Image (cartoon, rainbow, N blue to C red; front, top):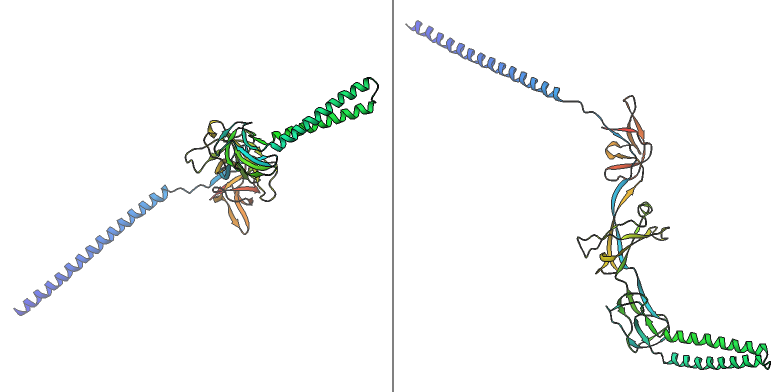
Length: 352
């Protein structure tokens, strides 16, 4: 009895161990099969993705010579086209002011009057002297006809009459200069004298501006001056009037740069309805499209590699091969380099 029980226990253990071994073997087999099919699926997908990939072809660019256009902004000043500090041409005391700041005047209107009394006295004296010389000339002419006076005496009388006549005209002109007139149509910006003020010869008495016509004055460099020509329009922006763009016409381009700044002066005229109501002597901005580096080849910055100190591009040959080509370039502009030497129009370069 005991023997049979022991044998049964051994058989049970063997059966259990066999079952466990079989189970583990089946599980390992299933895991291996799963791994096999998973690896196979991954390989299939890899081969499909690889076959879908294409070798990137090189990006070939043909070099072309063309102007590079840029919009530039220049500080400018909007000035009245006519702007004068009107002077008194003679010395004197102000006896009348005919205008106030802001007054609109026409050419020839009176601005200021100086005391004319001394000038009137001088004119009166020369009138009397000239009238006497005229009488003496007529008398000398009569005596010459009667052969009583000589030709020399007649010529002397004529000379005295001519001198006194010229002096009278000069005195009358000085009398007129005691009244200061507006030299052009405009607006009195400032009256600089009051009644009772003593003024010297050529001392300004009024600041007169023409607000119907303006000039926009700005300066450009030597590379950009060729982009401006007389008769073309530019865009003018006033900070005090956002949203409005004025179109003045270029009227003057300096033929030489200024000595100190080395910049070229340009003036553009703004007139007509656009000029109505604008202030003078204010800061502004001029915008213009500038062709920088006219007819010079440009290459993308991505195509240029710096080898040592030499910029280099890969030039494509007719055989399909590439060769390095050293070039000379200017400053980068909007992602491209101007090529000053080393390439010509029609060359093809590769961007990798």
